[in-house]
Image (cartoon, rainbow, N blue to C red):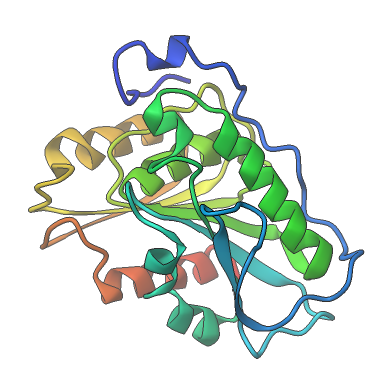
Length: 239
């Protein structure tokens, strides 16, 4: 499988295989708290986990892993997703990249893949997560990373949500994740003509199931588009 990468020869210089080893399993550690709290795993660049009050350990929940854009942080991811987490009952995990953006965007898979393995295991040890409803999502650079990593780990992430991605650069594919992609028609940061309008046909040509929404607007996630993505997730089995 071949897609456009972040820069010309980046795919030829990757040192990591980009594969996540962790899988959802029955919790084995001390039950974790509800509400919003830091992960406490990554130092200055860490992350946040939000567990809605409606979470019940006897009913495994969906987990949405939300990746921030370049220069962003976990609070940017949480700011508009917590309300949807409460409404739809999914756990919301917002890890932070080790550098200002995700490792692949900087040139190669590596340290962020390892950190994601660590934070996912941290969640799986403490909360009941449905293995069929582990979702990878992201905005901007986080969306590019979500598409790339999600396709390579479709046996873990059954659904991928990409808000305004710039590229998709998986080295290979595992599983067949369902994809939701959105992009603003007036995006001046990652213009839709050279981003999603190229990426989506590539994904479809690779045999992937893609829901695409091009909206009127810029480099943003309109609340109605975020809600549409979560409703799509529910409709295709992510709830």
